[in-house]
Image (cartoon, rainbow, N blue to C red):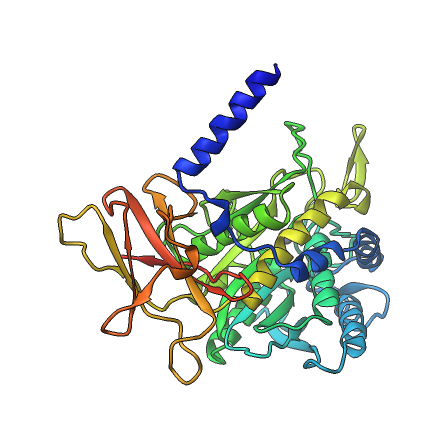
Length: 454
Ligand SMILES: [Zn+2]
């Protein structure tokens, strides 16, 4: 038995080596990020969800002035939590900014019985460089079976208390961390009525020209049981990325990035890439960010429980219905919060991706592939110092990028400046057999999103 295990181990090592997955070119594990992830607190997460559920309903058309119930109380609760962390943040970094935002609903009918303004919340954690924004989304509002019922008990512990808890922990932990890039947590309303709150933010981001680099919408990340099939899956989480811009859209690159960072920092949680915009007949808050042309994905539990979400809280034929906290799988939710943080913190400390990358010898019968890309610039336009590049490849039917087999070339020197001031790397893999991409890596080992070479 022992010999068989040894043989299996040897085969695995050889396979890993021969397909180029050399661990020396994997992202460096940053102890700051490891520490941040370790500080995600399960008791805090439980408290947030209990306190949100205690507000009875967070329906978009529910009370705005009742201090104990409704969407107004929910926004006040989230704002108070975030403001307390912002005030306590150390003074040697820019203070987080907590802002209530209002928008008008009902002008075009839809799932509204009146024209009114509704609140949502934006928390900005400013970066020192601040040339790219990383956005995290979750929706405040809840519903029962009747989407127009704004007074019934609608706890929304998982949908989307779980996403709100993720954003709250992010604000709490990042309030006291130095960030190069700005992280914005958008607590949106109007999701259940037609994605109106996130559409408002997406349009605002477009109009105000926010430098949006990546959007992660967290909607239902705390349930691990599938109704009907009773499948229990607490070590997988889905990341949906839109398909209309092809398999190498920026959104899909972001999805792959989240999976890779999770494999490094949260190895007991598998990110399952779902190459769809969302589930059948359903959408989420990433949608209007995609419509505005931003890079946006949805993070969502692997199993869904239809006895929980969008249900009236009740017992019927021996079955308890309703989205109550006791059905949230908190260890699972904590792992999903860590998956978010691993991606967000790496993105917040990584350089920009190369603006352009191409295969320079596409017309040549050459089994080498010559890759050329624009160096990432400093603000004054000169090539960034302290940035190295990684060339990635994948076979045409593979889903995920791998670092190219370095063929004895150090990962740190992939790419040297050519006569035109571009970076160039001759890769001993055939362009006929692989797709290629290039990414920039910070001195601390944080990789950018990849840019595909065409
Ligand atoms: Zn939802």
